Each structure stands twice: as C-alpha cells, then as structure tokens.
Length: 444
Image (tube, rainbow, N blue to C red):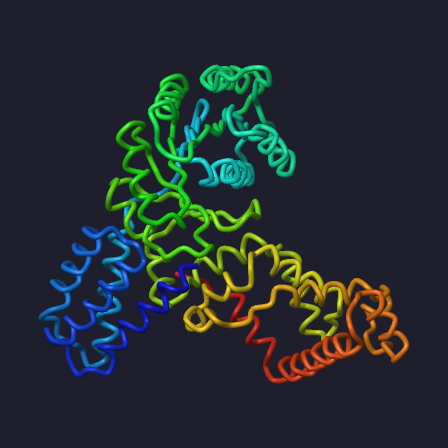
C-alpha cells in the first residue's frame, strides 16, 4: 500500500538522519524534498503547502533529547501532522440502535461502489446485522446482476425492481421490503457517471430525500489522485455526504487522494477497500496509515487481521501439537489457508515494522503458497500424517499429481524436517515456558 510514497519519504528523511541537532538549514533541506514528494504524489498544492508550514513551525527550535535523534524527532512530527491531515476524528459507521440503518453509496462510475457495497454488507453481517443490499443502479449494463451475484456469494439478500428504471422508486420500495422482512441495515448502491453532471446529482439528491439515510458514503477510486478530490468536492456541494471510502488503495496509487481529500471536504475517511476479495475492507485509521507511509509498519492492523482469521480452539490444538512435536502436513495446510485469508503476502509484510520499505522490489511470489497446497493435497492421509514414509516413488507420484517437480516436493519436505528439528530444540530448552509467557502477553 503506497510503497512509492513510503520509499520517497524514507529517502527524504535521510537528509536529517545523523545530524547533531535540528537547524533551520537541515530542516529546510528535508522539507523541500518532502514538498516535492507530496506534489509528485498528486497531493493538492494548498494542502502540501500548509502541511510543510505546520511541520516547519513545530520542528524549528525543538531541542533534541540525548536519546532521540533529529531524524526520529522529525519523523515523529511528520507522523503527527500526517495523522492530523487525514483526520483524527472518529470514523465509526453510525448504526441506529433501534429502527433501520440506511447507508447510501454515491460516487462516479468505476469507483468500485458495487463491490464495496458487497464488502460492507459482509462486514456488517459478520457483526450480527441483518443486511439488505439494494440495486438502484439502473443504467450500467448488468449492474443489478453483478450485485445479485455478489450478494449470493456472501449470503445477503438483494432487492431491486427488474422492470423499472426509476432508481428513486427502487430505493423507496426497498425500505418497505426491509421493514416487512426484518432487515435492520439497508445498503443502497446508486448509479455513477464517468464525470459529474446535473442528471446524476439530481437523481442522487432525490434518492437521499426519499430514504433519509443514516450515512451517505462517497466512494472514490484512490488511483485517480487529484481528480478524486475534485469530484469529492462536487459531490459534497450537492449531496453533502457523511464520510469517504477509498478504494483500490492497494493498486498503483500515488497517495495524493488519501492525503488531500479529507483536508478539502472536511469529512472523515471511514473505510479503505483493498483488492477484489470480499473480505478486503478495513476501517480507516489515520495514525496507522501514517505509520505505513513512513515505513514503520502497522502491527495493530496485522494483529487484528490475525485475530479475525485464527480460531482460538485451532490455535490451542496447534500449540499442543507443536509442543509434542506432532505437527504434520495437515496442520501445515491449515496454516497456509489461514495466511491466505488474511490477505496478500505483500500487504501483510507491509504491516510489519522494518519490512515495509524493503518489499517494493521484492519478489513476493503468491504462487508459491498455491504450489505448496497442491503438493500437500496430492499426498494421501497417511503420507500427510507420517511424512517419514515419503520415499522416492511416493515423491514422484506426488510431483505428477500436483503438477510440480520432484525438486519442489523434496524442497518442501526438507523445509518441514528442518522446522521439526527446530521445534524439538525449542521445546527442549524452556520453549513451553516461553510459549506460556507469549500466550499471556497483552497489547495495551
């Protein structure tokens, strides 16, 4: 996420690293480079100018403590200002405690509204909400069918009126349908255009007046940079939305949209949407994104993702197997599936402090996990449970069955054996105590 921006910030901050104290000269050199980085990232000119002035005002005259280097101090100041720029205010989605919650999604065509609607529906369903999706995009070919397919994937009902092109009628009738069928959350997907026009705005305003939404969310493609900020302002002037959703932030996004949009429209960013997977949605936290931009990772989000995917009982069973040295290829397969659920390897690595600036050009091959899965799935139950029986002929059969080479199979078995040896040493040298201490560790 925003790897180019991270690398450029890292390079700019090196100008002040190693200096004895912060001076007007070294801070000016650093901020001149950071201003260039912000403008290259398509950050709004006025936003970039104000940001640099705020950082300079806070940095000049700061005494550097013995335990803190100028580089660390300026990084902390920039982190705080980035957090302020992207908004410290609460970003929680407002949900009515009684009565229906209506969420209206607006934005330009191609911004990812329909996919985000399904992601949000899945997110809220997992939080025990009874969700109804509403297909009110009556112009884009197959838009309603797309939402129905997505709804089917996540087990959420989709409401529309097939024989009408009246989006306002569909939105209004959806409220009656939701009331009759006990849905407490309604997500309305509206039509977009390739650009802002009067017809689009009139329809969105009419829908908003009809359904009186609890939340109106502006969904924007973060890859469009400054254009996204301009369309956000146009929508807000007409519709007055409550929050922003940034989509495609994992793509080739320069970051200008994420850093500019809140400052221009003064509305909080509530969610970020990453990729096409229906569980790739994150609540927006400005301090966490600031950390990732500065190459400091985001360990809190990493832990949260792990907690969502790891079953507590499975984790305890795995711990017992590790300690008794009974970890087999079935357990290996379970761990791979868990990692894949958490997201792409590159995305996960970017959350780990120290790795985020080193993965830009790293060859992170997601296909390796697929290859390992294929090899393990080509083994018999007995072979998975007792890898010691994997002789030459069995390995040859597994390679043929998985579409891999014998070398691939041998490499996996070698890695497994090395892990077994490591665990044996670990458990024989106070490992049980270490694992016990780790289990009782809590993040404050």
